Amino acid sequence: MTDTVLFRLDVAPARRVVALAFLIALAVILILTALMSDMSFGFRAAALGFGLGAAWAGRAMARGTRHAVELRDDGVYLSNGTVLARLDDIEQVDRGMFALKPSNGFALKLRHAPGFAFCPGLYWQVGRTLGIGGVTSRGAGKAFADGLTMHLAVVRGDVDLK
Image (cartoon, rainbow, N blue to C red):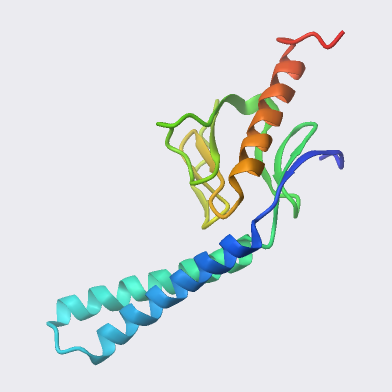
């Protein structure tokens, strides 16, 4: 792991607060509906399950969005040192309009499928696709994706900087 941070994608504080408020409100409404309504048992159980799921997602978002995403010399990391993608494992950076990507973010197509990972509001990984973004600002996400694209081109020798 190198310490040289080339680009940093921080969480937008206002977006984080709004997203957390919505998740907490959703959890409270669903749990109260499950506990106080006279619906059938199945509907109450489903409302309680979804309410607890929203509460879990809010807790996971509160913990995960304390970190930033960083582009370093050898890959994409979280600011706590967790590796999201090695540079030699990234095939493509996709931030097109019709790409399957997070809001205000971009997607990386990887050569290998490391599995499933999820941090609400910051990144998700399903199979060979890593989506980065969510509660980040649009401009910062675009700048990060452009910087990553340029860094990949330089490392792979597609661009000569002389």
